[in-house]
Length: 364
Image 1 (tube, rainbow, N blue to C red):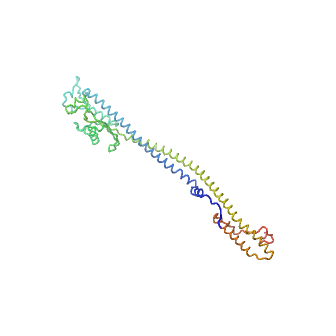
Image 2: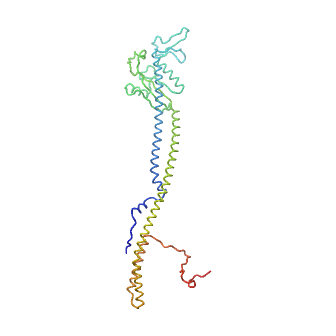
Image 3: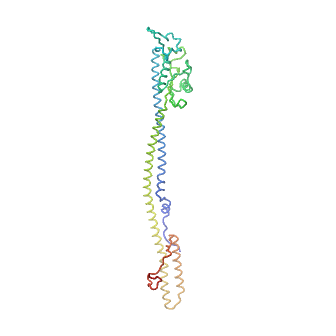
């Protein structure tokens, strides 16, 4: 005999059973994706901040180097417009050997002081030496065909001069790390102007030609160190903000998960209660029929026994219905998985309706 009871909804029971009921699991399930996304965004923001600082430093150095270049270019132009300037001959300022063909290279004042002409190239070299001694920056006037060996271009300068001559660049700059340290190198071409022909006409240059260039070297180790310190501070700040944000997300998710877990538990309890009610109703319905049969045949059996008639058939029907009830109860137990309570070994069960004198219990 099958129990004709309604089965619980599979969707809700399986859905709740598959849904994590632990607040910790719920917290991980909800907060982990947000945490990963937040950490990714924070990492991207840190990298962007680092790159932005590096880019801003390069832009600042480029503008500084360009200002130095333009300043020395203006000084050279002023010198060239005046055909050179005369300064007194000293141990540091000797007559320029590359102006030996100039009859007015050296002059003597009425008072007997000796003066020598300083052209733009000589002036640039002396200014560069002073700047280098101060440790701030260094100029280097150079060319692919220098008259003065001291003006010979190095590898980097040679590359940039070639690009200038090919009209592929108007200026060049780069951060370089070598044995001399970390430095920012800037270079721009020197173009032939009308004032330059006083000294360079014989070399076949034309107006606007690239006759050389000036490179500017700026030591940036101190600036790089300061930037590293600022970057570390930013990392610490971002780390604190990130940790606080993650803690806030996890805390909120934990509270939300507890609420969800409790709600799920209540729903599951309601489902179990509904199932128990439906099962008890079905069991009552299924047990009522055999009980009615047993009661009816018991009365019939009593009548036959009182009349001395045979009642074998009625007994068989009663036994059959008892077996049927037992089968129903077994099926209920298999569904509910109910276990009989285990009594303690020292516990004794007796019928309270039996008179005390007929029990085995003795008063103390």
